[in-house]
Image (cartoon, rainbow, N blue to C red; front, top):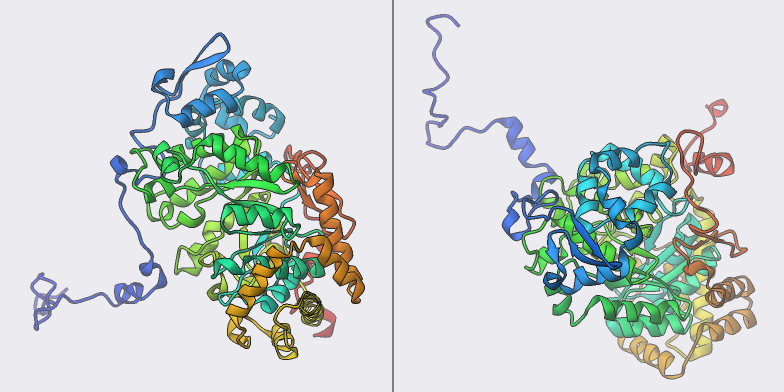
Length: 575
């Protein structure tokens, strides 16, 4: 700079008017969606730390006369009821001393070593304490967590779950969206309601819709536990997952619960042929102000081992309804993947989250689901919003119906099984129409408020509830109560469908009810294949046998050819 050049300013960074001069780049960055997200610095003393809290215990165990008398720095008389439950019902006491003596770094390397089988890993990981499992996983970075998840997933074939809800609890819309979601490839569908007493009707609509789209989709309605169990016993749903467990005793007590009461409830579902998984997820204890200064991952490890001790086949975790808490602190998205992995190390099915919005950034929401998407989990989403997020009564999802094409393209780009498939508009409309007309007939036969032809037409073409005519919620609530009072069951619905020209949907719903009796799909990671023959795929007959390149589930053959056929691809010779 020449000597006679006038300096830009005096170094104060002030305009003449006295306001700070801003970088145009930083002003542009301030307008980006990411700045609307919530981020906080770590505060380990209260539990605002995703992983590696200084207050997490060191792993340890002492066994006397076949009983664990000390675990993770506590003697038996210091155990809270979570410690005691895990020590008495979860950990393989015969193997625990050998497993705990394993060097954690070496075991972490075994997780990503294709020469060490899943079976060998599970033998040791199911004999480890919460602190030991956390110490092992803390040694992995995210690519290594993905590698470990690819090997440790219980079922060989990855799958996906969706949400089917309506902000208006509109039954016609729910039936149509359920049919489309099933046809698109989801193996499970989950409903909840805006008005609690609507649950029997929305569960019925979802059940009819999904069985129209593809036979064998398993459904649930996430409501108060007694109602949820009754809907399952009636054959209006087939699984439950919103039975929550927690990582500190205080939060359990706030819900008037214990691990033993949760185990009793789970047996109520499973003994009646209803598939059961629990729900947990990082941040719930902090949300309740009772994290005890521990890391989110350590508390989640306790939840996972409570689930295992209860005899429940699987767990939904990965932040779930508290996802904004772990993702607000450093390594939060890594922690979410780590808790999915620990669930697999406990030899449980994992429905791995990605089921609630937490960010305003499209890039960040996609990054959040990539570990589960690339590795493949039992249910990559739990679930994916099959309608616009404004209709998702689970507070939105990481992806919604507006992302269908991008999600299919991601599978095509990377040759990854994401649990959905490309579809054609004409066929989707046919399924939506048949589903709503089937529900229309069932409502008519049961004497419920009629679904008008106008509603049918709207539901066929609707994107969301904003495209639907209004229904009387009060009248539908009366019908829902009548459904319960008159003891209407899935078998009654099968009869109505069969007698009114919907034999295909009736057969599919009957297949679901038969599956309940057989009970095969309540095995670990059980789903119906979805091709109409109601063959069960589970960790029993479709175990994950990944041992490196060329092994395990591969997206190839007919499945890969189907993924290639996105609806706007063109043939080169036609250009």
